[in-house]
Length: 132
Picture (cartoon, rainbow, N blue to C red):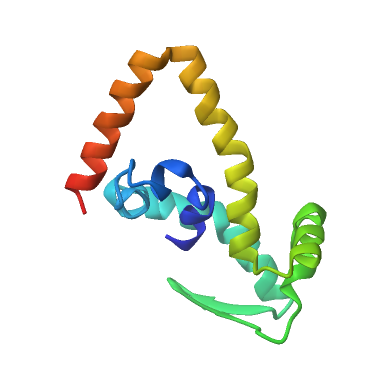
């Protein structure tokens, strides 16, 4: 769930309650076989880190080497942002997602029109608020 949530940090729909608060849990656990697909997707990366003795894992449990400077493995743009902002990784990712999702939301309004976008927004807000 943590890995899946990275894509939604800073998403304005989640920030204002316009999205299902259980969306991430449903993405990972709601579809048959999805968790297995996530494991298969990330297994090569985990095995590589395990070979370097940077983590140990068995099944669903991962133990990271907390003394290792994991920031060095991040993309350079994210490393730079971390240094400049003095924020943690989650805050930097939230800023990155927000920078792309806010303009995308505005483009959606322009493309669909104000009336259709307003109806959509109210429907999403209602759905999100009802699930809280």
